[in-house]
Length: 328
Image (cartoon, rainbow, N blue to C red; front, top):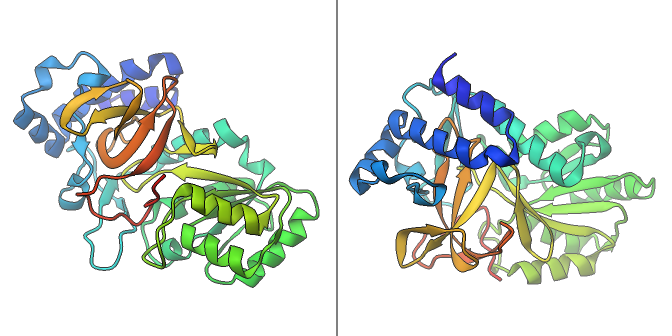
């Protein structure tokens, strides 16, 4: 068994107690076999000092726009692409297969919501469905297939049909989950205000230039007022990551088991810690074994002692991203 396959097996059988051990093993593998990451580390002259996850160099997320960030042992077969907005350069996350992605998103879903089989799963993701290579569509499609409920499905702009499906099934008492991009959820909420019992909405961010950007509090207030009785949750994910975090209340996110967040000093990008307070968000995503598991995002967060975090916004000098642009 190759070194890659050995590490992949460990990730697929991950326990909380060995996350850091595997993270360091992933680092040493990627620092040898990911040529973009290897060169980045060489320029920092950091490799010999890596003894903890805080000392690992985190690759700026913008590298996914300019380079193929992937191990030299991987045969590239496919990629996920960021949503972006018109005229922007998009990021591409290359991978050989989706086994780690599927394992990660399913484990994350089950951690917070139980089995997909217990849910009717719907996707209101028009901007994502209109293009290829969306990791979000891939994830929701996978959950739909596991759920296997006859009412499952995706919706573009056919809000009347979505309303019909929701009312029919909420009245039956079945648990329904609706993954929705922000602008489409707002349009639906304004067109079809109603009471939606047993409905959990997972907002994934994204105004796509279709209106004023809202804070998460503003968005959730509108959704609560119009989609009465529905639970409003949030998902933190992006095309450059294989793992997700979820917020079930108060805008505070908890990571899936293959993911951790660390605080980056905005004035010293090499200073990374597990301290509480505000800073930039660095993500360790073990499921990113094909590419790079150590990503320095441009998101600003508030960090809690127990590993949870809030997303407060984006650094002023970063590109506007299409996936999540909400400020607290």
